[in-house]
Image (cartoon, rainbow, N blue to C red; front, side, top):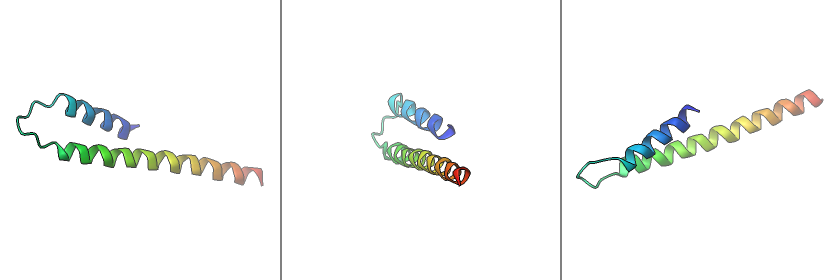
Length: 58
């Protein structure tokens, strides 16, 4: 949940940035990394739930 909030904050920062320098690559890199971390956490959480369900069925 916290990574999602960080992603939202970085998107808002990207949309409302008033910097005159057009270099926003750091924000783009941060967005990509947070997106990958969020997807990885969701997939691992689902895998862990499936493993627990299989152990309980045995």
